[in-house]
Length: 292
Ligand SMILES: [Zn+2]
Image (cartoon, protein in one colour):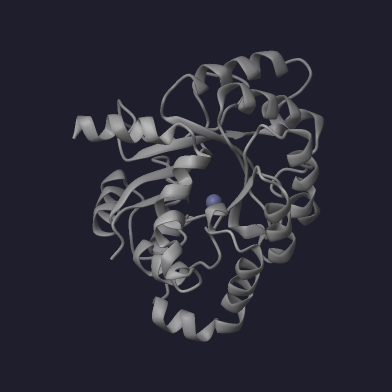
């Protein structure tokens, strides 16, 4: 078993939107369950992608993790979701102010953009305001990239090649391609290989209720594609573990990811790289330790 893990990309909402997904893997989407799963798998922290409405803001931004507790659970932090569809010329200024207020909280560690689910390219003017914000607050921007979970998504927006332009235009901001841009893995890896400021998370490469051993065998040709392109990249400092929970069982997914990463890179991919990309994590973890 791994020493300690940071899950860079997961989901949680106390509003019930992931209940059905969690049911698929035989679990409930509750904080208690997340805590239990974390303890079972030595996961010290999860970075949740905000999808819930923020009650503080009438403009439906930023999207946050609604946890339903008085205080943010110590084992979770969040990336604020940007709902670009809700942003217009009139509310832009107020919206940015709301993001700034939330960025002041130490439980905010990044921004999340839902390209593909929202019909704007990563180069869109709307997003550029947020890249400047990310630079100011020293947080990375995570993009949904690759296949979309439903057929309403529009794929041209979630192709990872577009991030090359963003990475060049904002060299001081760190960007994360979620899901390795699957199935455009070669394109995603090339953007990561070429740009110092672009990283990749390994969440969502597969989903559902599976046993790792069987899955690794059955999907060998697919998993070989990752092995091949990671070998091309030859830089395991650029990859971070993420699960996309509750889409998969944490224990089984960890094993699948271990099968596509060389053993000597485990510590970096499963833990240390996240501390470098999400600049606020080292301090947060220090505090978390003190409170225990
Ligand atoms: Zn996700």
